[in-house]
Image (tube, rainbow, N blue to C red; front, side):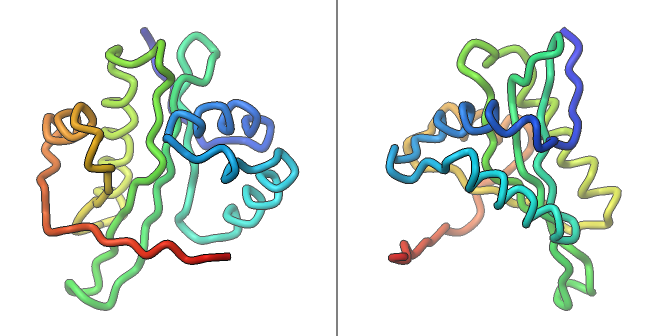
Length: 149
């Protein structure tokens, strides 16, 4: 199966919103299409922040966001963060996630990043095995603080 990874377009938002439902979001946290459009246009203004889609046979079957962040530490080398990685249920196990992560890794290397980081929920044990198979290692702890808005 040929997989094409490209930058997401505004017209891809309905499919992206479908895929994001697989991230275990609470239904009340889902964005309306209008709000998603606004957010999409806003983050496109950020330097080195991009949402990508993976297509197979012309159908979007996966997505991820990649953020490259400049740093004064680590000799001034930037670092990458991959976020919101999703592959549709019927496309899992077909190498799509691997292609997406290899793309993210190559993009970070091209930008001179010293690391690529991601976080994954503790209960997603299969995802952890997948990331480890690509060379990712558990490192430290991840902390978060839910902010009330």
